[in-house]
Image 1 (spheres, one colour):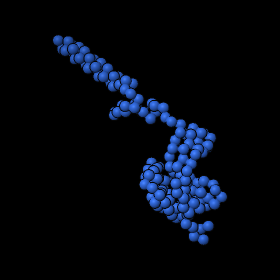
Image 2: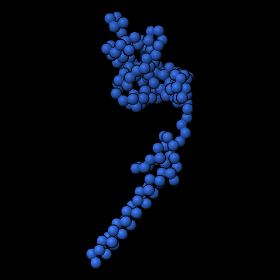
Image 3: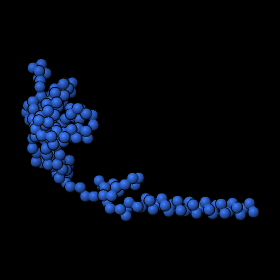
Image 4: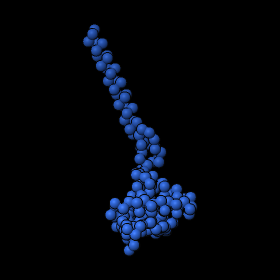
Length: 164
C-alpha cells in the first residue's frame, strides 16, 4: 500500500509540473501574440527593436568651437550633470523655453568649459553653440556625414589672458 501512495504522489507531481511548464511556455510566448508596441511587464516585446525606426534623427545638442572652427564634443559634466540623458533633457528644456533660457544655458556651459582648464582638449574652445540638427543616423554614425544644423544660441567662453 505504501508503494501505491508513492505512485499516486509521483503522478500528481508530474501533473503539477506539466501544468506549470505549459503555463510558463504560454507566458513566454504571449508577447508574440501582442502588438509590437504593446510593451508589458514582466515580458517585454522590446518595441524599440520590434518596430522600424526612422533614419532621420532630430535633436538639439551643445558643442564647443575652437578659434579655427574645429568642433569639440562637450561632456555631460560641461552641462552640469554626469548623465547623458539628463544633459539631453537640459538642452531640450532650454530650447523649448526660448531665447533667454538658451542663452542662460549657453553661458553656464561656457563658464564650466572655462573653469575646466585642466582638460587640454577643451583649452582651445572659444565659443559654445546650442545647435539643432537633423541627421541621417546611419550616414552620421558610419561616415561622419553631418546633416542640416541650425544654431539656437552661441556665446563666448570667458578666458583670462593667462589661460589663452
